[in-house]
Image (cartoon, rainbow, N blue to C red; front, top):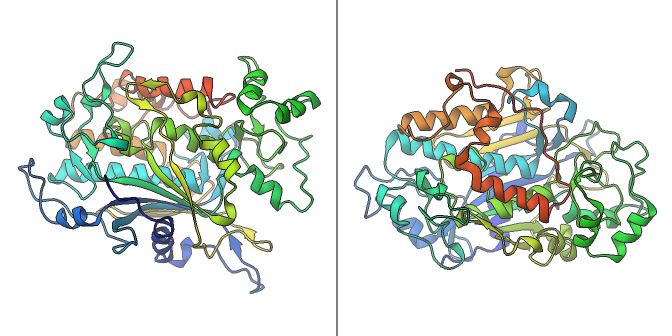
Length: 490
């Protein structure tokens, strides 16, 4: 079993990678020379045992007869105290969202959610698709990803053991359907683990106590102008007397889920529930769920996006292994309620769908600090930065309003490499390069919309898991629809 890296090493790996970026990717010192901007930072770190990492640096797997391994990763933390090799492959900053009424204009070109955690997870998927593209074009294997042989697809060979048991290949799930993993041509190497560092507690349920503690008078928002009306006094009383699950199930029904999706920081007394962004009460409303809610969902689906999951086998090590926060941003009660097996996700413990199941990550703290973290006199930055690192293809972007800085918001030329449109294009390129004709992700020639591709049968097990989470754990989760009826034109 791979050695677990230390939280400080994971944080330092991300901080070092961010420090190497050009200054245009970083917040500014304000004109008065005294104040500065602040922004949340999130990064994705991969780990492997240092010995295995070294052994694999220039040779192919014993069962691989193609070209030698492609050394695509740059090791950011070669001598971690746990004896593991760490590499930051993706990082992001940001805290903005696209208003819900603008979604129909986006057409896959605009990022809806530019909070650092969400951008970092999207950037990780960008990195992973790029790794698959390299393997499809060059052959061989990377330090982190390999092409699955036909034998491995049929037999589930090289299956990880213990805490990283693989989602069964070629199995028949409880619905009687053939397991979808058999058709996926790539996979993470079995000793790879994924870790995440965030410089602030995720917005939503995991940070409610942190926010309350930081308010000068402990007063939450006045929600009289909020898009969702405040709950009644009975609701607030219920929230303090009942368990989170009991409260959510009592409040939410099929006709009122949208109104129960609380706006940002409204009503600190209501905990264990789904909240929506943004953080400012006067900002235009969105239907983007909080980072706490999205991370909780990822504990059930893994980190692979729907398009990446068409290429990469969703093994257990595609789930987040550990989540690192600064000690100052950690309230154990909040974390256990938001993410833990005994908190609001407790009803998911016994459910699985085609191998997808609840796999909680470990939350640990670090003493390392981010130079641009939030402080009392700092001003929020309106920019987001994205870096996809560690591969032959690297992306470094500054974003504003969900598109590349300097471009108009709905101009297709401003689409980020993380956008829906660019990701669809890239996955399709891999399909064509690798001649994966059995995958049903063809472009506009078939007249498929973005929504149709995401809802195809090959992703049905993942879809069932998400539906179960919305029904049993994250009650009140409403889909953020409006940017899914467009075609890919090439």
